[in-house]
Amino acid sequence: MIVKTPAIICANRAHGEHGAIVRAMTPELGLVAGYVRGAKSRTMRPVLIAANEVMAEYRFRVEGQLPGMAVEPIKSRAPLFAEALAASALEWVTALTASALPEAHPYPAIYAALDGVVSAVEMAPSARRWAGAIGAYERLVMRSLGYGGEMQAMADDWNAVLATLQLNGVYLARHILADRKADILVARERMVARLKRAVA
Image (cartoon, rainbow, N blue to C red; front, side):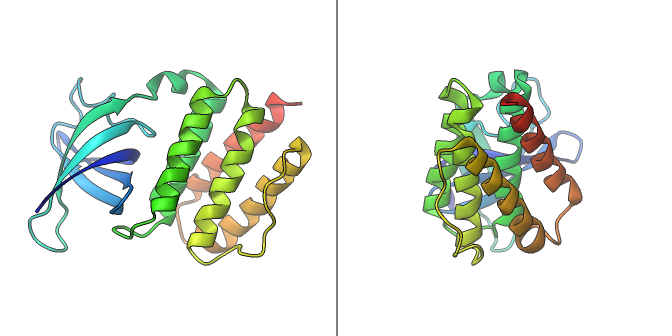
């Protein structure tokens, strides 16, 4: 079976001499991993950067087997990685998506929200305009996985945004990412620290 779909790159891990296992969030299939041949080539490396929007073609052969994956670039977010705060935000939301969500479960609302957060980081003139979206995205992921349903909606006040991010961090560490690699939460701590410095 061949499926072609828009996707947002969330994780990229080298596999073999030339390839990589790429995990991407799609609107209808959810989070899907695929093997990309030639992922280490000069032309493919910039395409497979986290937060890039691509057209992904998955070739499913046998159920339970990693599908082959081909990608065509739609929108590159590579220039954002030149700015430390934007880079840390994109690294965090894509790492959260790749680490927290089960594969091949459709989460159309999460896909739309991830696309919205990435676009906000790209388009907003300052972090004050997108930090609240990060907190809201974290809460959506937690609610979709059965946690954090009692938490209040995001506020516009900067102190309230930081308080929400702090509370989210507790829930994420305790429930969502408790059995995941510590470096995922380190990425979040780096983003929050940079946000605090940016508005100090």
